[in-house]
Image (cartoon, rainbow, N blue to C red; front, side, top):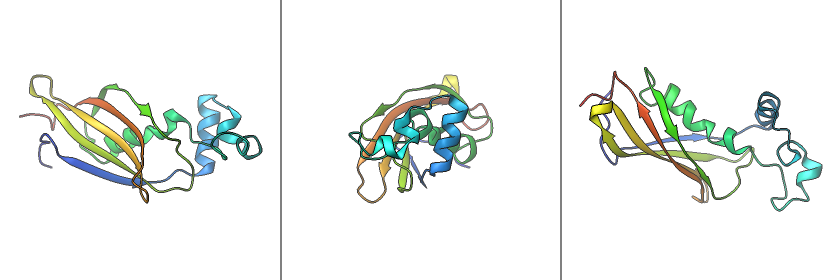
Length: 138
């Protein structure tokens, strides 16, 4: 696998399932009805259940831990801004862009974004710093 360079882009397509949102609610303890009750959520500003914010950005962890330089990848920091809700059963694209390299710390600053695949509407944006002493050596 080649070393990352500034402006490298990696994309990953995904969707969330209702049963996974229910499982996340149980694991996290966040059983807010906006996430798990269709009868409650249909009267909300969203008109349906929304995926938990932290669950939605867990896609970044999945990609960093299994797809993009996964061996020895360590998350050092992460932030996120939620622009629009994420729903189950909708196709999304997670986009990872290399913003900055920190050779002395074996680290990379990534821009993390989630777009609705069909409309290309930006849903979530943030940054993460990851360290990898095996692959982030320049």
